[in-house]
Image 1 (cartoon, one colour):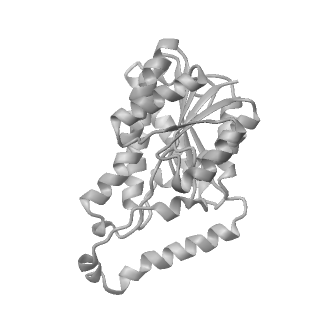
Image 2 (image 1 turned 90 degrees about the horizontal axis):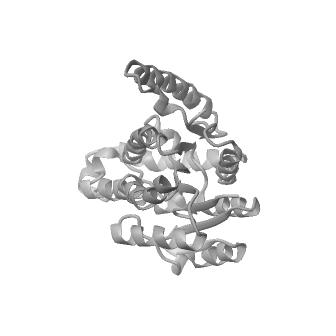
Length: 289
């Protein structure tokens, strides 16, 4: 059984994943920004189930280094890291201020980098590890009103492509999980633009994002299989696979978009292997099926 650290463990994907892994006998630690407030009930339930909870802010380097160290100490080691902490954004792209964009990238991109820098020395020293990353279907394509969020997940995917190759020689395998939209509290905490002057310039079109969001909510309500538990099932299934035989990307979607993203991923995987083969370094891809 593995020793697993999940960032953002109190979130929509983190909690069911942690509970599923604990149920399978894995040891789990997870991070939250604050134990109290809105996380208090979830933290209590996770701790009652056997999870170790540490306070950690992935936008702060010292906090991240301390939190990862506490988690490793509580677990007595680290076999699996699940970079799950994230923040969403929604709105007309021009209305997003540079500060709005910075908040999203600080969590979804730079935050992951902080966690990796804190955890990787341990994994490299032991010569083995598994790192999972929560991306998104719109980390592969872009849809209206999600430009900033998509950009952050596109950036994450690029970084992970590099980590995949650069860590393979140290026995560290990499896996990206790409969920479709899910009905979670994630939507309640999204960064939204607040720029009424620019919004006025869009006229009636300024009402379209709200209409689109309402349509998505209705679709998710009607798609009963599209639930956060599917992410937990995907993570459990990945960890059940033999080391070095896990797929690099796993799509989790029941809205009908998933097969198209899988087709796109298959083509990119072939292109990536061809390019690396031309440079004689295709072996750097060998820790994935």
